[in-house]
Image (cartoon, rainbow, N blue to C red):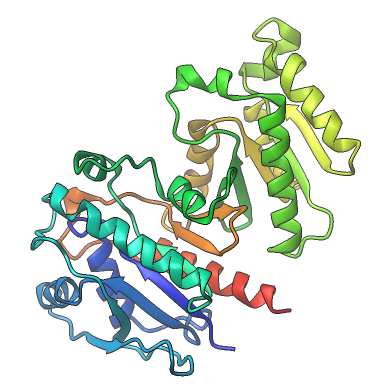
Length: 333
């Protein structure tokens, strides 16, 4: 089969348009060469960026009624969404906040009606979308709302390391209150099921971090492990889940422990992601688990400070495309 992958470049003033042009103009690696890649974006924005880079770009009109075809090098298939106002690299414009969300909506609708097999997202700028008067906390939450799903899980991956998050974009002072036995069981159930169904791991082994230093030190450094985390893990073990922990994060994120795990659950954003990005920055990706669609993403932000300079690295985008294609192929096994 030829997977159809919707690609949303994200914030038009960031490096997303540059990544799109570089993706088109670079030699295709074997893992993405056989896919149809459809950019959902403003065609003029991409052509302007191609001219800035001095690279030819052929945009092929996407026709969902035609059989899928691999996108040739030097080109992208395009499904046009028009900017509200012209965009300049590095200069945020709230007027284009609705444009960014419209690209995401079109991609999500396309997966819902099976026009697309998966979505790969470029970086968005949450602040400018909110400045446009649109409440927006991130891709993960947006796609969950569009799909009518109450609970999804953010997982990042780099090489053989997968790190899922019990909480996502919260101030640190709110993390403890956001962790409950019920929420942990929901997250771990989704993570376990996704590893089985999407990644074809028959019996996943999941390492679970404690919340506090030294996983609470037997209650001396916090009681969340004793009162919340351990009871939740024991309840899931009774249902057959293979769980390790809770262990101190600085113990779990060591090579001997990671070798035992198919994935790690971190309690909060900056507990798990610095380790993952240190291991695989430039190759790391974001995967949303629990959705009725496949969605992967780059692991970096809009990089406004280098937008338009031609120095953005496509490594994370290529990895996100490769992972999306692999998940589509596994789904059809």
